[in-house]
Image (cartoon, rainbow, N blue to C red; front, side, top):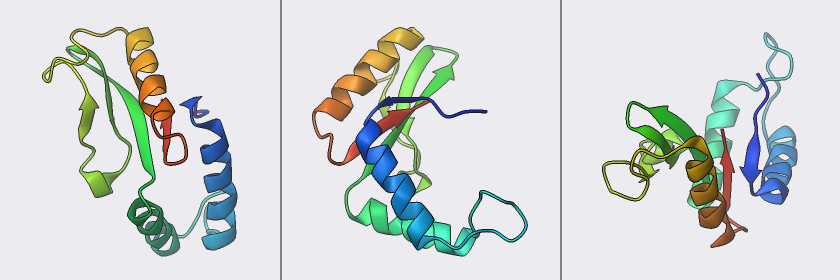
Length: 111
């Protein structure tokens, strides 16, 4: 499965390079990282204020959630808060792109 980046391409690319530099490669899973070093790095970027948003399909349509368990995968926009009532995937993508545009140095959005 390939990750689709909807907004924040430059930040995502910088983070991928940083992750490769800072995290320990997995000995068991090529192309992956050891969990301890990956968790430390994710905590560091979270502390710097970098936020990852992910699109999620729900029974109420599409929503946008935090992509990090460090935020409890909080809902950023969805049906219940009224920001994306019964949203289509395209509406969720548009919302996520606007959200990233408000702080592109610290935000990116993926599927």
